[in-house]
Amino acid sequence: PTGWVSEGALKVEVDITDASFGLSVALSGSRAIIGAPGRSQVHFYEHDGAAWDAVFVHDQGASAQHSELGWTVDISGNT
Image 1 (cartoon, rainbow, N blue to C red):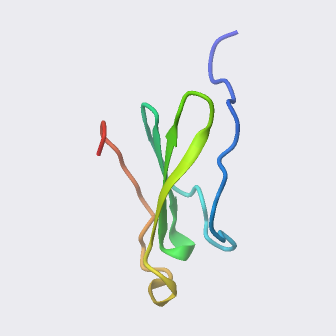
Image 2 (tube, one colour):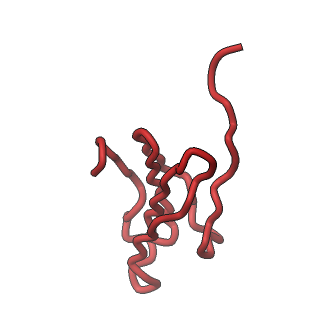
């Protein structure tokens, strides 16, 4: 068979309750960016060949709830 093969799950390091985590996803090579607009967050991950590791969470904080950060994400190469 050909197609997608599951290599594991992402470990989320922060509270994503009511975050709409995964509403937007962008992949490029070994990098993934995942939006969580309900919490005004964008999560950055890298795949090291064995697992997906959380690299950074851009979080605008509670005062920016529903600011639209994370509704769309994009990645091109290393940026």
